[in-house]
Length: 195
Image 1: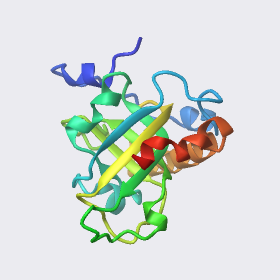
Image 2 (image 1 turned 60 degrees about the vertical axis):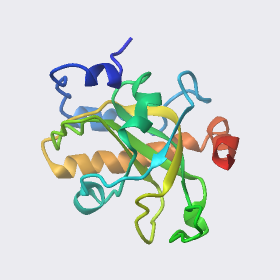
Image 3 (image 1 turned 180 degrees about the vertical axis):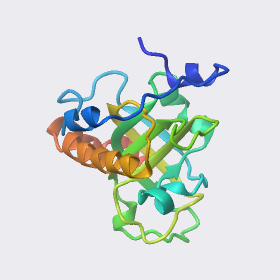
């Protein structure tokens, strides 16, 4: 079995991530995973969205929501680092002062990076979720729920920002295609999101 992200976090040195190659890019499938989620999926995550490094939206054109360290234990304890897909929902605060539109409050497709982001040489394990919707404003401090349903690819390092952006865009397409199967669509209506 592969070393989990949590096990890697206890080691003194992070394992070096392989560099993305053109061969890897060309060979990437458009749909990943079995026709229905298999163990350890689905994995439920939740927590208050916190400020990250601010690189996702500004540097990569892919804004991400960072979950607190303690929120990622359900996935880091059973899964390896890499890119995952599933559904997420940003919840309006209980005080009724929400900046979210009705559309932004729905359960939406997401991709998530779990790891150290080798291109940026992060020092700590993070889970960064990109909800595939064009939000009109940030939602720091709002609660986010996510159901992680499958694995897309390993965490990689890159020789250029452009190569990283290319893979991120491909990750989004793979997530949408993979979630388009009946065995995954039902999770958008899972009772987890209505609790």
